[in-house]
Image 1 (cartoon, rainbow, N blue to C red):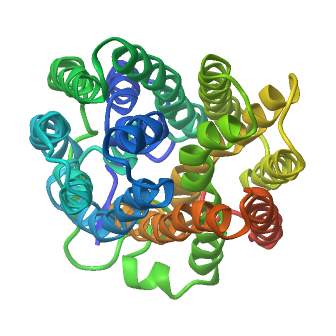
Image 2: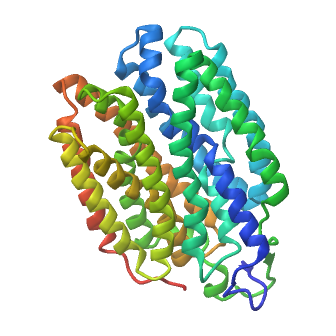
Length: 409
């Protein structure tokens, strides 16, 4: 078993923890979460026009990404539990950047497009949120929620910046050059910051003989997987996953289908990114004070309302409200996941538990990413699909209502 050093059960704020949080913020801004997932929607129309592929064909890449993350996430959990976050992150940054740059040279074949998107999540294995959040979580206890929220906030900032940067590059130089520009950013910004600032609290030491107290060491993965809380977490995040990527990748296309101008649609997407940022910080602050599942109930119901409004037609300023409500739930979900894993299961198998739940979440993402454009193709409208996503969000809220009190605080 594994134990924390004496007196470390209630850690306050340290300079190492602050710098690690800042490094995580910057790394998450320009990693696969923003470039491969949140920024994908900006490229759908340009790639449609460049190759004559249908929207369903292009959007299928989102499903491929999600399916590959299902495979990659448990591997990331094993690697980070074994070697720590920093070595895996540093190894992943240059190869992920090279993979994104590869789109500049992509041939006009749909199979090549799919293959490249299948490879990208593997190249970025260390850069999905788990790696950074595990490092941050190792430094905090009493302010865990706020620390995780601040680290995650940069995905919101990245989701606002990446579409704007990509949109500007696409307009001036084309979509190929846009991917090349994003690849350079993904390398030159996160790499030096990670080298200089990211640290993980010193490796936990093995305790010989009897097992350490559960409040210190946490549960092994197998023990955690036999708890009802683990499966509640898995169910809630599977339902959230169905809505996540579908809304991210299809928000700009559904707005354009409704006659919203490209510039206004990009502004809505940026509003969504800003709301995600505030959702992450605000959620982090709240879950240190309010039972985290109750916070998720509130934001998932809000997103369900937004989907229902979108389903009834998008016009006027209400589209900014809808984007904000969706951004809040997407901002909250990973703060709460990182927080709940430590509160219910501890740090012993943090990486494996997070990686498994994240894989289940991404499996839902793959289903949702394929379902929403297919629904549009079948019915000629996003309306039935959006109502279905609203139902998934309400069901997720119901699951969060059944979470038990925390095992450790």
